[in-house]
Length: 311
Image (tube, rainbow, N blue to C red; front, side):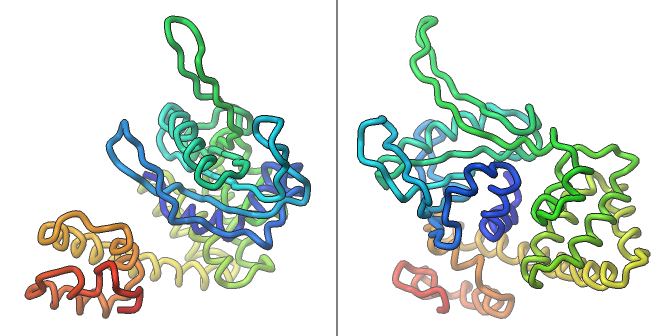
């Protein structure tokens, strides 16, 4: 499963993602009016489960999109679906891209642009991939979609660009092993002093810090490099970030334990309850743990269907 930070990162830097990898298309969208459909669920009959799509935006276009069949009415509104794959093979994403397209197309009756984002498979870096189905040698289905294969792209090149998302994503790109730590230092220094606000800088630095080190030895070298970096801004921001990571790990453990206990008592949690659990702060989680000992229903704990996110 990929890291959830990618959803936040892509939503915040959606326009930058397109300008970085699909500049021709970027000029045709009105990114300032994007509506995020991040709670969209698609059922997967083969896997026997439903899951959220990774990143789904509904946004106006600056150029009409012809109907998918070439005959229906043009649209000035479109869906962009980005699905993230962290596995080291292309097969799972190929199938998902095809099986998610039709429900989204039917549900919203809008043109859909599907994009695959590979974190561990490079392929050709940027290109088109396809899902196919056959019957006795006859191809019945061919579904094409554009993809970004980060591991095949040149990290050195992207670190030196002024697209700050590209600087952060260099952590997942091709970099000679002997250059990884030094390049991470260069990238971090650029991000710390980039013109983005504090929140956006933090998202970028989180991505860089999480993915540049590929093993424990490199992680230690990375942290040593940060603490001894000649730029005070890098030291200050990244040490704060390490503290944040430690706190986030504690909260993640609390939430996972509470979810296990809740499901052992009341069965699988509905998606709304899971989302609510993910947003509650540490003090609210402690209250929940105490109340769980005597509670008889999810409603009593503020996790029922009628409860609000602040209950």
